[in-house]
Length: 142
Image (cartoon, rainbow, N blue to C red; front, side, top):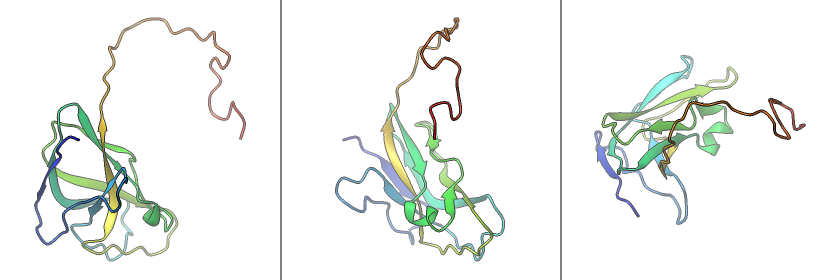
């Protein structure tokens, strides 16, 4: 199990942790309050920065409890590369026009540490001679 070093920039926020044994993601907390998410998308500070181990990325994902209330991570999953050392921020959006309130310390997203597989990128010709071919969106039915 690799070490993920987390530095709290705001010691009043909880240290991120896995909620339950076996959880894939750990919670990220809001470092500020938003009285009404009228301005969207909203870039939310989490009050932490991380040292990601070599060969890994940190994926930022929506929390189902927020998504079911219309708040989601806009670029989900977002990728934090191993070389980034700035504060982790989460871009939040909402569906509908209902007032959404987020308080400092609320859980706003989850982060998943994932191994990175890099491809050897090669230029060439891509054959479309497959069962699916070039059929795209909705081609396999609803």
